Amino acid sequence: MSTMADGGLIDFAGAAPVTGSLEVAWNHGTRGRGDTAEVAAIQIHHYDEHTVVMRQAKAVNYEAPFFFLLFGNERALLLDTGATEDPQIFPLRATVDGLIDAWLERHPRDDYELVVAHTHGHGDHVAGDAQFEDRPRTTLVARELEAVEAFFGFDAANRPAETVSLDLGGRALEIFLSPGHHATAITCYDPWTAILFTGDTVLPGRLYAFDFPAFCASMDRMVAFAETHPVSHVLGCHVEMARRPGRDYPIGAVYQPDERAPEMTVAQLTAVRDAARAVAAKQGVHRFDDFVIYNEPGEKEMRRLIRRGERAARVAKVRAVLGF
Image 1 (cartoon, rainbow, N blue to C red):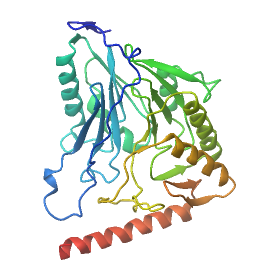
Image 2: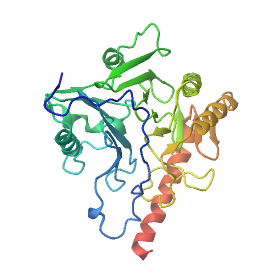
Image 3: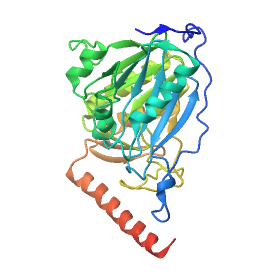
């Protein structure tokens, strides 16, 4: 447990929810020509003084996932570690250490801790874990379901219905399991910002629901939760939709010049729930204005997705050669 070296406790409960900002132009990649070395591997945006939203550059990995650093009085939470292990090209540990050092300069504490956890266990959300394995005063939550349940305190007999708390020191997050996309998927609600962090379950892009009954049940829980809590933003981990309704960028795209903002609304969250109910009996791909639902996609759907990505990549190479 950290102790206050100076400045005292921050009141994360009494002042909540705060008004932060997501007014930021996120790096959306390049066409592949010119020097991409000038693009930072990690883009950093402070939603408020105690909340950091980061995005991995498409120049490093096309997935370009978002990840989040939340500060409490006793510890910080890093939610997800990105899609790349190599710290030379993806210096997540150094970036997070710098952000924590800067925060501690303003809010001095001794023995400040870090928790590294994940929205779910897919590789593009856990690849950077190894960078934190030897970090002092750090708890690294493994990606397996048993480890997730043990750390957060989920009761296997009651999963996934229960909601548990993770207290960062006055900043108590509410967390519940939300399987469907992945068995270890969690939804994290932060009362300080009123942000609902939804991982890959809800985002402006392709919603891969590999277990569709579980996905529908998770959507019901998310909407019910949002109906009883103030929610400022629904914030997932990727952007794959363009601003034009119903259009998603091809898988593997490294340039998304007209991409949407990552944040969604409660109305859009409800729309995902309603759409999922409508297509529950229809396996396959279902396109909507703000998202695309993949209802237990099979080999045919995934091959079509990959072929589209390969065609787009060939076009991008031609554009780069021709200089436009």
